[in-house]
Image 1 (cartoon, rainbow, N blue to C red):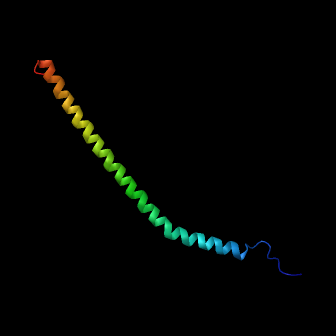
Image 2 (image 1 turned 180 degrees about the vertical axis):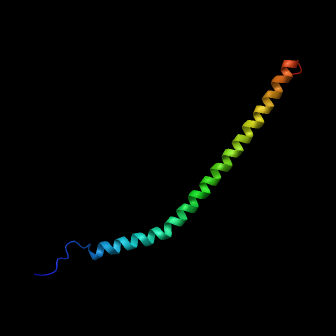
Image 3 (image 1 turned 90 degrees about the vertical axis):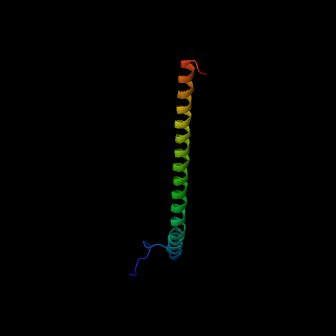
Length: 72
């Protein structure tokens, strides 16, 4: 009547799990930072594009008004 250890994970599996956790602790913060930087760049690019669209829209509106008045 011996002890049954068949339900316990293998030591190699435990070491792999620990190594994976350590790698995640190192890589995850860097990934989060990179993701945050990328999101900020996209927001900045979006603002630039929206500002350009507004500017072009105003210019077009002005040109159309001038043409309607016969100035252009």
